[in-house]
Structure formats: structure tokens, C-alpha cells
Image (cartoon, rainbow, N blue to C red; front, side, top):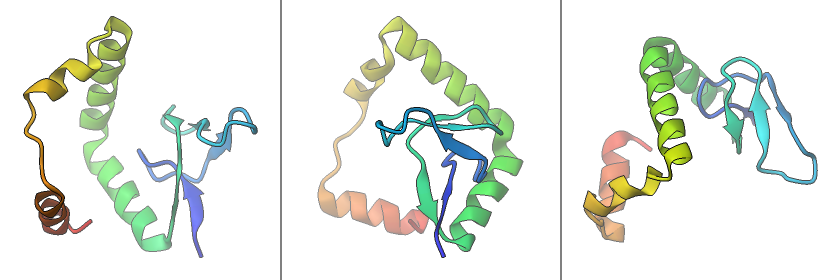
Length: 98
């Protein structure tokens, strides 16, 4: 059975902010706002374990991203990143087990 969880911390303690806007959810455990995911028990456990092990890093990155968005520089980093073909992207996802 799939359940709705926070993609950041794996919590089920999520609620829609505006019912008419399906992508606006809030997690009451980690303050995440955005789209959520539907996951089975295995994925939920993976995300929760990753959150427990890397919470400080994840929150620091989220704060850094928030500052970039507010400053209007969030997408500037993408200019220097390499563009992957579909095959290269699939290979990288396989390596990550995704």
C-alpha cells in the first residue's frame, strides 16, 4: 500500500495547504513545503533513514537554496553543469539505485 509522505524526511505528517493546488503540501515535522510523494513502506524507510543520518546537511542545503531563490540566483548554478543524454542519465540513476 502506498502512502503520502514528505520527500525530505519521510514523514506521513503532511497536509495540503490549498486543496485546489495539488502540489502545495506542508510537512509538520521538517517544515518542507511543496509536492509530496506516494511511497511504499520500503521507500518510506529509506527516506526516513537518510533524514536521520543527514538531517543537518539536508537542512543546510535547503536554507542555501532558499537564500538563492530569494536572491534570484538559484538557477545560475545550472549554467556550469554538464548536460546528460538520456542514456547517461539512466546510467547514473541505475548507479544510484533509483
